[in-house]
Length: 110
Image (cartoon, rainbow, N blue to C red; front, side, top):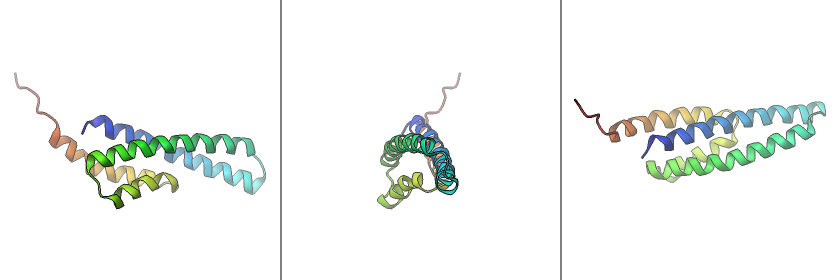
């Protein structure tokens, strides 16, 4: 597995998590204070597109890391639970980093 697979997943996990928090804030303003209806629509659409990209990258990482279905499902669902993607991303990185280090070719000695 290439490091770029993990990097793509990490970027999308952070983007998806941040946009979900922004969406939650917008929804509080929309339903709690009756303002920001248009902004909530735009933010929800952006989060939806980012979440789809997150699903693709997370599935790609999971298939290359040979995760069991339950773990893959938890990682995929993490993009829908506020702040969960931050914690799941850290756990995934701690698990995948040793695999990447073991697979990396040793530098040539001069």
